[in-house]
Image 1 (cartoon, rainbow, N blue to C red):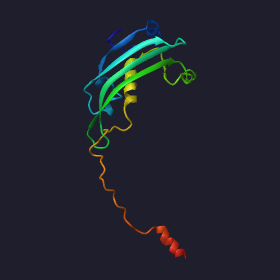
Image 2: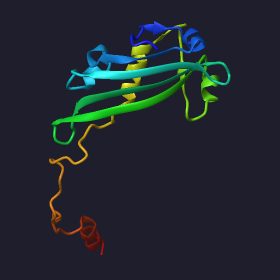
Image 3: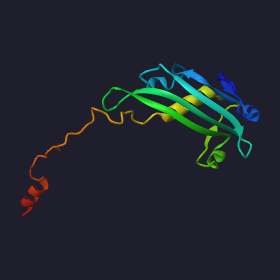
Image 4: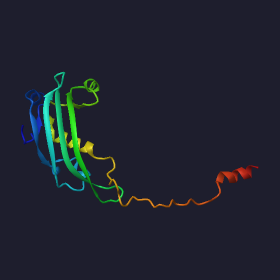
Amino acid sequence: MSSRLPKQVDPWRVSEQGLSYTGVVELVDFPRLAPLLIRLQGKVAYAFRFSRDGLGRPLIAGNVEATLWQTCQRCSLPVTIPVDADFQLVVVEGLDEAAALDDATDPLMVDEAKIHLLELLEDELLLSLPVVARHEACQAWQYDDEPIAAESRENPFRILQKLKH
């Protein structure tokens, strides 16, 4: 087990050796994630375990934990987004292999012989972000007990109905 995250690894080699990596990286090390966050202070804990699946393909099981900060879309105040995501990826070489996987495993198609582990972590963090960041119980988003009364005015189609006769 190594605590230093290599920049890139050969998934076939590390899976054959059964290597694993655990450690912590800084949030500022993720350039695609940074513009979506309001605070870049913090750390991301990770764990990667490499093995082979039943068909001999490289299997990557892992976990990523972090606390991310975004702006609440209701009240414009900071909201924390805790991330504790487990993932399981099988390295595949084509769309046919990817389509044959079960629902519990996601495909990881590789263009070259190496995969970038930091980018893989960043992908998992991006997937963990909500579509719309908001507080569960936002103070700015509370309704009054009384509904707003609709103006009473005559239906315009009823006026046309009267003109028709």
